[in-house]
Image 1: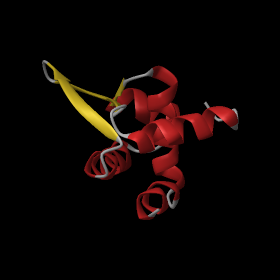
Image 2: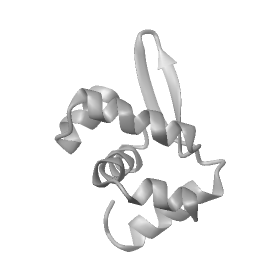
Image 3: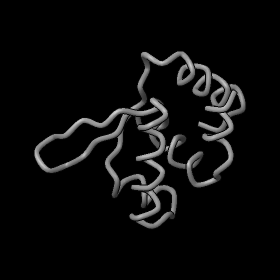
Image 4: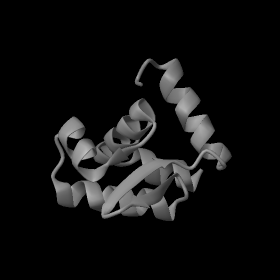
Length: 88
C-alpha cells in the first residue's frame, strides 16, 4: 500500500501517469504540455515513478520515452482503476 500512497499523494504525479497511460508512451515535452507542469517537475515525477517501478524509460537517440511498466501488477491495477473511473 505504501507504493500507492507514493503515487496518489501528488496530483502532479497522477497527471503524469494519466498522460502516459493515455498515449501508451510519451516524452518529457509531451507530458509537460499535456499536464501543464514545468519540465523540471515532470522530470522529478518521472524519476520517482521509475524508482517505484511504475514506468520505464526507453532512449531513442537523444529522446527519452516513458511508458508503463506493464510487467508490474500494480501498474495494471492502477490502469484499470483509472479506466473504470473514466480518468483516462
